[in-house]
Length: 118
Image (cartoon, rainbow, N blue to C red):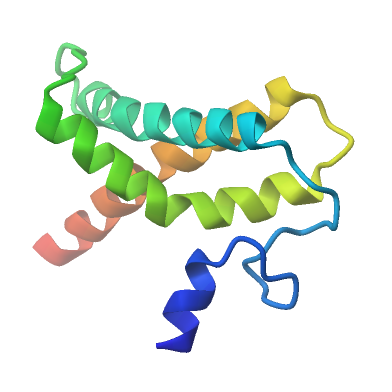
C-alpha cells in the first residue's frame, strides 16, 4: 500500500517517482502541465483512430473528459518526474513532454489489447 501512496506523493524527494529536482515549481505551472496531460489523454483516442485509418474526431463528452482527468491523475506523477529533470528547458518543451505522457497511455493500452487478442 505504501508503494501506491508513494506514486501519488509528488513532494517525496526520496522516491524514484517524486520530483527529480529540488527546485519548486509554481502552482500555475503544475496546473498547466496537468491540463496538458489531460489534453494528451483526450487526443490519444484521435491517435488511435488515425492508426486504424478511420476519420479523426475528438469527443468531448462529460464522461470522456472526466475519464481523461482520472487517467491524467495516474499518469501525472511520471510526467512530474520527467519534467523535474529538465529544469533548464523552456515551458514549451515541458508542455510537449506532458502531452506526450498523456497520449502514451493510449498507445500502451492498445499494445496490451493487441497482445491479449492473440
